[in-house]
Amino acid sequence: MSNSTKADLEVSLKKLLLIKPFDKITISDLATDCGISRMAFYYHFKDIYDLVEWSCEEDGKRALQGKKTYYTWQEGLLQLFEAVLENKPFILNVYRSVSREQIENYLYQLTYGLLEGVVREQAENTSITEAEMNFIAEFYKYGFVGIMLDWIKKGMSEDPNVIVDKMSTTLSGNIANSILNFAAKRHE
Image (cartoon, rainbow, N blue to C red):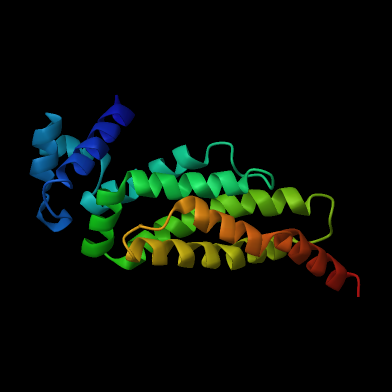
């Protein structure tokens, strides 16, 4: 029941964002739309921003299911772009109304999860440390998020397939090369 109510609140928020700006949506609006009490909302979320964060995380988890390997990361990244595009009114409204920082944090979490899986897989049977793996994932995370934020800022008009293809071309072999460089440095 709990996750069902949370999902209903997410659907309600996205529906309301089609007709009014984020900063005009109240908890009463959400509760009324879902047919629950205001207290029921507070049972699940501390405020609307908490609902936004949860919604973003859920969308990201759905987009990345099973796409955290070296051979599927491009597909996972494309699915992230598509999930953002599917929720364009929601994302643009939140981006313009809340803060860029909240969208950045959401994207950082999603892309780090994607990249960490790829780095871990590629680093298997190497001598690099956990900290070095994390650094590599963090490094590439900032590039991914920067590209996606620019895309959002420009209204999401460029085809995500083109962006992911450019990113794939740029990154081809680079994560594995970074791992090899860290491992070689360790043996100097």
